[in-house]
Length: 553
Image (tube, rainbow, N blue to C red; front, side, top):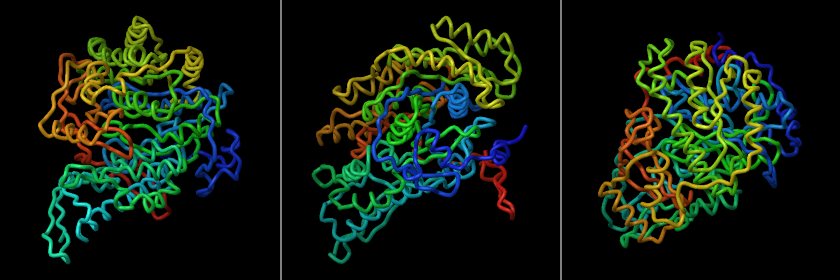
């Protein structure tokens, strides 16, 4: 079979203006980036479409294909004559050059132009990185120029869109206020990947340019000698930062291999951020189509939890149904099978791994009260006995499992899934949440751990306790909580597969993101700056003299 990039390059793309017409967008509402990409400049949104959230089980080394299923589902619904629009996240260069690869789908269920989307696209990530580091430069310059705000502890850090473990801990030395006879200022800090930055979260949660500017002003950059928060607005930074982001805030329009409109905008990671594309992109897609297909990163315990508990609250939206993506191979890995043996039938491993899927089903149905459907990404090695076991297990849990072939067949391979999604969207069930916004921070964290993860409780390090006391002292309350933890397990231990029980989650740090409007609880050993693997994907990516790219996936 052809590689993903070979399939993408053979696609005869439609002019992006023709793609826009399918969802009623005029050329005046587009800002063209060549022939196949455009920014959307829709002055007013009216989100009335059905909203379908695609999530997954806890990811494994075999891959589950959540984005691929999202794209294939949209193409299938388009084949059924539905007016549909995708709303996806932008890929980060970190995973593209690391282990995970790109995030443009796969096989015959891709968004194109694939190489552009996976690389620099329309420059949104670069603008976010620049705005972030502009604020950092203003902070350090303020300290250098005498530190009139008495900043004693800087909490806002630099970022870059790359996996680089060497930047996890760095030391800054500034001759702070030298001209005023002050001392040399030295502090230990870290650099985060852009996808984990607060600017990324702000861009994805902002309603418009004015809201973006207000959120930028509310970023907490550190604390002063009295333990009070110092904000970006105290440095008059918000105007320049918003100016840098003036184009990045506009969502991007591309297409699938089958010409289905796809809006791709923003890309926070779900394990260390909130894992959803921008509110502007989602509301735009919901305003121009009858069905909006969107996805949230990693497993339902991460991206979907944050989509439902945070994004839905902030945006005032809710999904009509939720699709959980899984594969037989991934469930066998959760059940203890070796990666080298996944092609062989193994009913015992599959049976042991299925509880992971069942827990995610329970969460969506019982915690969030949403209709749920299981989409099994089919592999040629799936046996009839394995397929039957999955379908029977789902049926016993009260949901339907559909096996789809979108990777090999595109939209044609997702027609049954599309039909079931359409039916499920007609069920009315108001969204409920895992926690009450008015509860204390520890109660909210505990509710997520016990209800969504299935854990026994939460422990806090002294540093985390200190940060919580600081947050309470500064009067922060009624905010969503974002838990940063491993994506590989329901727990905070990446080695605990399937459905672990009786575990406690250790919160080692807590950070208030004033601009984003949420609190991040960092659990376990999760890193905010990933590293490259032993053989990073970058080593296999190349381009020839004619500009032909190879190795990108």
